[in-house]
Length: 173
Image (cartoon, rainbow, N blue to C red; front, side, top):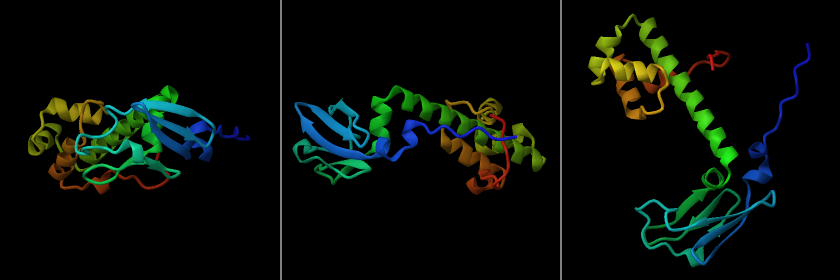
C-alpha cells in the first residue's frame, strides 16, 4: 500500500512565514510577507499593556517578527501572531491544534492517574480542584488553564515531564 503524499499547507511554507517588510502608516501596521501577501492591522490594541509609549514610526522587522521600540524596550510581534489575526484559516488551524493538544494532555493525565492507582476524588482534593474540574481537564476542556494541570501533576507526585509521551506512542484524536 502506497501512502498518499502529505499535502503542504501554505502556513508550512517559508514564504508564508517570512516577513519581508513592515511599516506604520496612519494608525495601521502594514506588513508584507514573503509570499506577497499584504496585511494591515490597527495598532491601537496590538501590543501588551506593559509596552508603554510605542514608537510606531521606528518600527522595523526581521524575517520572523515585527519589532516595535517602546519606552520599556522592544516589543517583538512574531509572524504567527500577525497571521493569526489576519488569516482566519490559519487561526482556525491553531485552534484545532490547541484543542488536540488539550485532549492529549487530558488523556495523559488520566492515564498517569490510573496507572498509579490514584482515585480521581483524592487527586482532585490534593490539587485543590473539584472532581468536576479534574474530569474537565481529563476531557481536554478548553476552559481549563495550565496551572491546574501543574497542580494535578504535583498531587500525583509527578512532573510536567511525565506528560511527555515517548516517540511512537499514539493518542486518539
